[in-house]
Length: 115
Picture 1 (cartoon, one colour):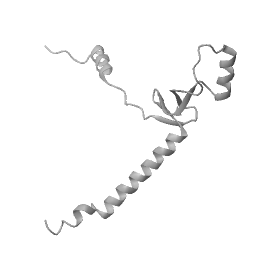
Picture 2: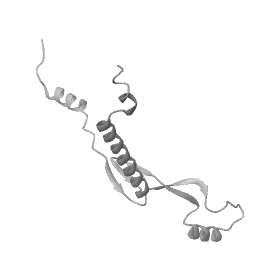
Picture 3: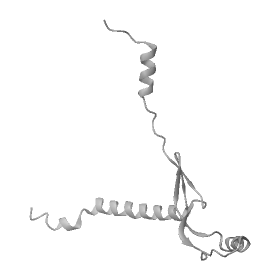
């Protein structure tokens, strides 16, 4: 004997359905930086807190910061330097793909008559 469609079966089937992944949002911000291991001023065990605080204020931090991309959930925070580099690489790639599409592969062009 087969059972018909029940509420429990519908609820179980709804649990199996996965949501559609959201497209990531890109936000350009100069705050997308990460600290490296490189120090801006040398480490000293004998330096007072007051002097350390002054050095941090003068140099803008204890460690060097580099641009990066930070992902939080489906939002990606991109540093403007990285954004410019990515756009430059994409335009070069699009131009080379267009050139290959119109001109063909120059290495095999001379061999077409031989094949």
